[in-house]
Length: 296
Image 1 (tube, helix red, strand yellow):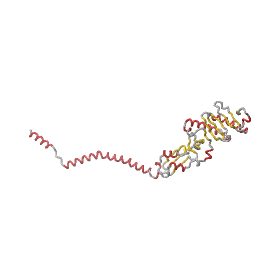
Image 2 (image 1 turned 90 degrees about the vertical axis):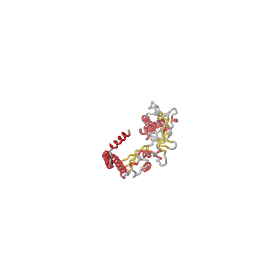
Image 3 (image 1 turned 180 degrees about the horizontal axis):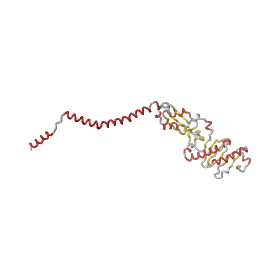
Image 4 (image 1 turned 90 degrees about the horizontal axis):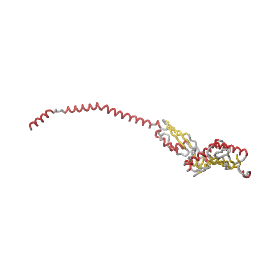
């Protein structure tokens, strides 16, 4: 048995081929050459694929950060009460800034925080121009509540009058009474303001300022809108709705009073269904007619 095993092991040793060192080196070289032929182009292609985007990025960054895109012109339009310098200071933008460093939304928010600015639009115009368009508030009335506050056309209190404003011009606006600034933050208060605004617009559209200058617009949730004249304090009670029609009747009344050289303490045009029904309390009418006010 031992001889049989010895013979078997001897045959295995004889079947093994002895590999020379130089053959091993040659085989390794052949494997490396084959791998290079197979994977070399792929690796090179991958390297090129990575290098090209990187080169594009570097070139792009170099261009946009260069002098071509430095701000040379900043245009401000739409300002009447504000100065361009004030707007630029509030915006935080200055010449020689990179145009892509300007945060458009942030600049708009900063400018809109200015008291007279209702809306701001900022636009880039490549390569070196920034445009700032301003929409200023147009005051409709003055609300006396914690100071003289300016009310815009949408019922928003946007500014308190200060000595730097054109005080005489602003105080010539009608005074809004019957509401507070907190009322105007509620829907019910804004609805009353809109009634007052419509009445004031209809008054001006009918050209009634030639007859009477207004000092006050009063609103009441029950009685509606009343106008108060600057001279004599005549109250013109209008109620709600159908303001253009009521103003036409008011023109007839004011024209007749003017022709007759008389004035009125009050004019009532607030009847809901009978717009033609107008009650006029003439100044001093009690001494002339103690029964009732004249009817027009």
